[in-house]
Each structure stands twice: as C-alpha cells, then as structure tokens.
Image 1 (cartoon, helix red, strand yellow):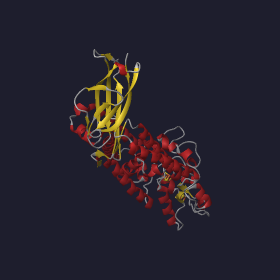
Image 2: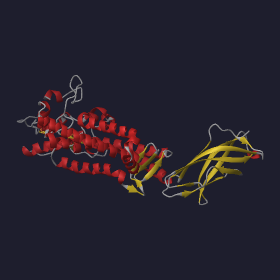
Image 3: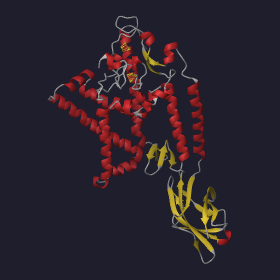
Image 4: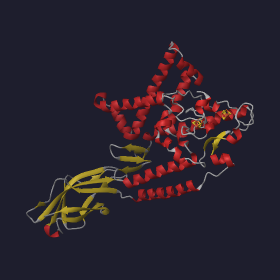
Length: 454
Ligand code: SF4
Ligand code: SF4
C-alpha cells in the first residue's frame, strides 16, 4: 500500500477500489505492551476453556442452556421465568460496555474480545512460526507453489482446522455443559449425526474466519465496532498519536515522527493512527510498542503514540472523569443495585397454574363443579423441596395426578390436577381462586387463577 492509500480515504483500508480484499501482512508486535497483552490474553483464554469445568454447588460457573431455558451465571441459576432479573442483568451489562467504551474506547476489542485473542494469540502465532514474519509471508504468498510452500501451507491449514474443531467444542461446552458433551462424544456417531454436522459447520465457519476473513470481523461485521462513532468523543482515552509533538513529520524535520511507517506495518488492521482515531483501531497497542522502539533508537521521549484523549493531547493531562461518564456510572449503579435486590429477594419457587386448554368445567352429581389445571413449579434453590398445594381462598378439594409433589434442586415439577368447588361458592361464570404452595408446612408462594362454572 502506498502513502496516498492510507492518509484520507472513503473505504476500509483492507478493501480496494472494486471492493476486493487486500490482504494485511502485519508485522509481529514486540514490546512491553504486547507482553502485557499476551499475559492477560492467556488468562482470558484459560478462563474461556476452564469455565464449563469449574463448579459452584455442583453447577457449572457459566452455562447458557438455551434449549433447557436455563442460564447459570457465576453459580446463580436463572430460568426463563426470571425475565425481569435477566433483563436487568443484560441492561447493566450493556450500560457497563457503554460506560467503558465512552471512557476507554475500543479497549475491549484489542484486549478481551475472543475474536482478537484467538486471531492474535493463537492463529497468528502459529502463522509466524510456520511462515515467518510479514515480509517472508508476503513473499511466500506471491511466490510459485514450490514443495516448501505446499508443505508450509498444508501444515498451517491442518493445524488451523484442528484448532477450529477444538474451539467449537469448547464453545459448545458453554451451551450444553460438560456432562452432556461427554455423553455426546462417547455415544456412537450414528446416533448423533445432526449434532456432529452442526459441530462441523461451526468448525468450518471458525476455520474460514481465522484463515481468511480475519480482521474484517472487526472492521466490517461487528456491531460494537460500528458503535464507536457515536460513543467516542474528545474526552475518550484511546490509542492516539501526539500530533503536536510529532508534526511536521519526516527524517529531518522538527517533529518527532520520522515517518518510518513502522506503526502502520505492525497494525493488524493496517491503518495509520497518525490520521486520528479510526473505526478500524482495536486499541491493541502494537503501534505504541513499535513507535516507542523507534523513539528509543532515535533518542527521543517515548509516548509519541500513547493512550490519551484528544483533549489530553491538545491541552495536556485531563481527568478521565467527565459529566458524561459520571452520569452513566450513576445509572449503572442504580440498575445494578436493583438487579442485586431482585436476585436476592426472588421467590424460592416459581409457580404457573393454568386451566388445561380445550377443557371446560364439569358438573358432578354431588353438586360440585370441577376444573382441570396444569401446574408447573420451578425449584430455584440448591436443595430438594417436598411440596404441598392447598386452596387458600375457598373450601375445595384438590386431586393431583401422580404421586408426591417433590422437586429435586434446580429442577421442575409438572403435573395435572382437578379442583372441586361447591356450586354455592361460585360468584359467576368466572371465580377467582387462590392456591398456596407449602413446603414443610410453610407457605412459600401464592398463585391466583380463575375457576369457570355454569
Ligand atoms: S512509528 Fe512513530 S515515528 Fe514511525 S511513523 Fe509511526 S509515529 Fe512516526
Ligand atoms: S492503530 Fe495501533 S492500536 Fe489501533 S489497531 Fe492499529 S496497531 Fe492496534
């Protein structure tokens, strides 16, 4: 790419005028920021792999069981019925991301996003190892298909495929849990062809992303990346070029930037940070390290590219706190406190009682009217509960289908029962009735529904 391509532009840097792909050959980063990022990323990677195997009270640390409509987040179990609590949690999370982004820009993308971590710390490292640094890789790709090239490409892509399969299985563990996954892989393949096909499809997708699509996820697909334009302002602390110090640029000018283009060569999205904050910048800090090593070599102060805000560069140091992120913090605090309150005060069981669809009332010979109901109770505690249901609003009789009402911990009870009420107790064609759910003689939940009669 030449200089005019990367200064001012109306399209992503990795696309040519016809919209075709321009391959990015990023130089291998080196330096203190890259070392910090490597250590942090390995912790995140380890967390990602270990989560399905870490248990709290016998439950995984995190389980997103969409099929079973059950979510376990840091040991706390949420059922589909916990809509308010889940909504509060999601809202708090979104607000936290907004607060974090207005303050620190796209730091998440470069430091904690699984896409970047897998690309930079796993796939790219394997590529450096097999094909060498950016110049060698560029030469290899442009060169003819020699024995060496075939061998290198075959080895790299075979390892990429194996890692994609391993990634998919780790990803699946978050959704189905380790027990179910072990059961799936230990059973004969013939019985799980559909699951196997899904696993292959997702693996194929990961392989395509990490071997070809790469940084385009961050620059063209990810909606979070697209939001930067509205979330960032001149007070946001991001990877910035100190134009006051750096300009006029050139090898023999007054400015500190010697125009060596090293910061561009190391950038995984191939941008020139000297043009200001751009949507492609994932705040990976590779250009900070690279420019600092140039500054050291030219005996100048490091920090020509650094974490700073536009205001910080223009006016010197500024506090990261401003009215905008203070206001977000207050709203986040209120929302999160409400979430904690609802989490700790939610009922221990969640009951739903509905009249069986399609059935009307029945008139019995003894003058009583009966209705048939479906009952569903979710046990949200970590202990088995012996349960009993009583009608607390009227004198009536309940006949439950099946044996005892008992639910194991974190389980569901579903059954059908008939409620008999004497005709004299009815107040019209619809009478409100109230049930009490008792455990060890203690009332733990009440539920109101209607009883229909003649
Ligand atoms: S690495 Fe530093 S000195 Fe070299 S071009 Fe980039 S900003 Fe200028
Ligand atoms: S400009 Fe710097 S921080 Fe931004 S993506 Fe490129 S190398 Fe990373």
